[in-house]
Image (cartoon, rainbow, N blue to C red; front, side, top):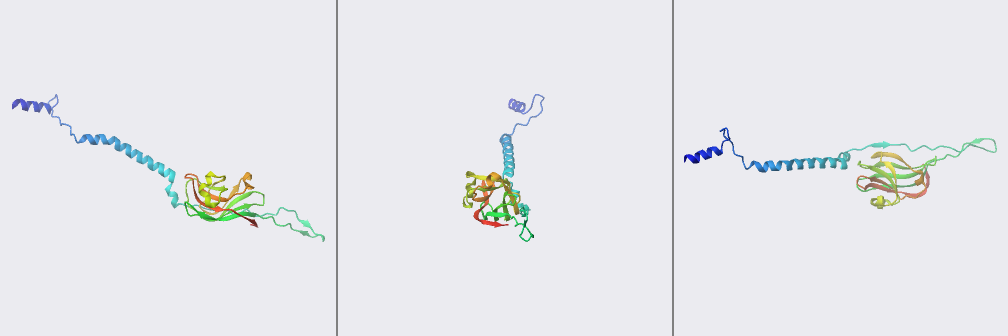
Length: 212
């Protein structure tokens, strides 16, 4: 009737008499979900950034070659005079290999040889020769009392950190602190400090000193 029509027309217009579109109930769930979607996107982005920082996946495809010469031998003894008056040169003083062994692989394939060498100046180094491993975050060179077969427990045993791995490929020297030089060490461990895992390890098998 006329009253019904006037009531309906009043419900669909504002005070100025302009028509008003009633709200669509289907729009409400979308509006309610929008903040949740934003939160999820932010969390995913932050997780990706954290994962890139921790794992640095690009390092799986990078390598760095470092080749260092073994410090040369020297002759520090004084020449001697023979009975005939002729001067004879002093015997050569040479570097001595105290122990060595090949690498075995753990988390990443690692090859080459590690040697503990006493230099002519009295200092000691760990030398890696024909060395090759994978790149990674916070990779260190350790001297461990453990054997190479127990490299996964190197952090729980006595060890000396010789510093960051200089390169993933090559021949490299790592000075041993004087306080640790005369101690007995079981192995050289290539240790990823970020994830507390060994990349590889080499037993240091004592042997009669070999001139290098």
